[in-house]
Each structure stands twice: as C-alpha cells, then as structure tokens.
Length: 288
Image (cartoon, rainbow, N blue to C red):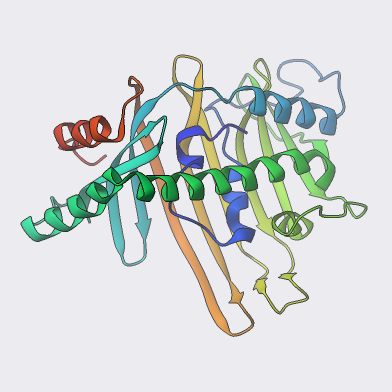
C-alpha cells in the first residue's frame, strides 16, 4: 500500500501495530462481484496484484496536508509537509482551539530544532525505519491470509475480500506475527486494483517473544481508509486504532485513537528552512 505522507511520520507505533500504517491505500468507492460482473481471478491473486500496485504507486512527489489526531485525552491538529529530507509538522490547534502564546513558542522551538542537520537526519531515519516495517508487512499480506470474495452488497467500482489467517503462514519477521490473529476485510478498487479500505479485528490474543515482549488482547481493532487525494496520488484519509495488551510482560498497553487526514495539495520540494517557513505562513488553516 502506498500511505505516502502519513507512512513516513515520525510518531512511532509499537512494532506490532505498524500494521496500521501498512494498511492504508484506499479510495471511497464500493461494489460486490455480482454488481459489476464476476471477478476472473482468485481473491488472493487480486490482493497480490493490489499489493504490487501499492508498491509501484510510491512516488517522489511532495505534498502538504492537515492531520488531526483524536485520543481520549483530547485532539491535536497539525499542518504537515513532506520534503526530500523527511516529514515536518506544525501544531495549529489543540482540542480545536488556537495555541496559547506559550504553547506556540514551545511548538516552534520543537520544530526549529530540525534546522540542525543531525536532528533532521535522526528524524528521517526513524521515518525510513517505519517505512521498511510497512513494506515488509505489505509484501506479507497475500501469504498471511486466505481471502474470499464477499457476497455483501456495495456500490460500484470495488470488490470486498473477507480474509482469515493462513495457518501455513510462517511470519518472516517480528511485526507480521500480528497477522496470525486477525480477521480482515479488504476493499479493492476494481479498476485501479488499489486497496481502498482495510478493517481488521483480533479474534484471539497475539503474543510476541513467547509473551515476554508483548501481548495484544483479543478484540483489538484497526481501520484504515485511503482515497485519491491529488491527481493520481492516493493518501490516507482515516485511521482508527483500538488495542489493549501488555508490553515487556508487565507494562500495560492501551491504544485508542482516531486520525484524519485531509486537504492534500502539491508543493515543491523544499529545504528544511523553506518547509519551516511554509508551515509558519500556512498553519493558520482552520481545524476540520
């Protein structure tokens, strides 16, 4: 999947939950096989083709977009921009209100540190590491699941796959172990063979490192949606995570958040200094 700007974000998820980013190449159309002609390929072959298209869809274009992260304690809205050096973001609202003078100063000090080339390299390295996690999980999807076409009724232009874990799948890396406990619906654009939506639910507990490193509890859910946002570019428009578990045996893990992305627009490739100036002069965009 492509998840371009969001997938390179610096905010990092627990390794098992990188799946959330690995499932975000979506578009807002829907349809069943019976509505637009029976598919001529096996469901897993269609998924494999869609995965290949997501990998091929990654490009070097640059974009700005708005990002709102909602958690139980409140929301943060940012203006984001990707550059040849990495992704930068400036906070424009907290709980849908403008920042106070002190909050504005603290946030500007945070992003101004990225003028230090070493700090920016560190940030970019974390984003690149996350991208590698995503690519590994993306490649694993067609082998990790057994998929069938759903007979559910939908709108035109897409096919819905219902997927369950493949018992013969041997996770090639730490992150993809989560796929063994997840049942998933995958919506694929019929024409472009791109993944529109993935909604997964853990039907059993999933452990990592024989339970010593982490455990995700049964019932955890993930939903990621993407659509065409600028020209032929696809980007995430919605991501929702709800997981409970433990990390390193005793530390509780609770992840409950919804993230929305909108107002994508093309921008030129910028230096870090130019990107910071862009964020300062454009970040008065109102919250969604």
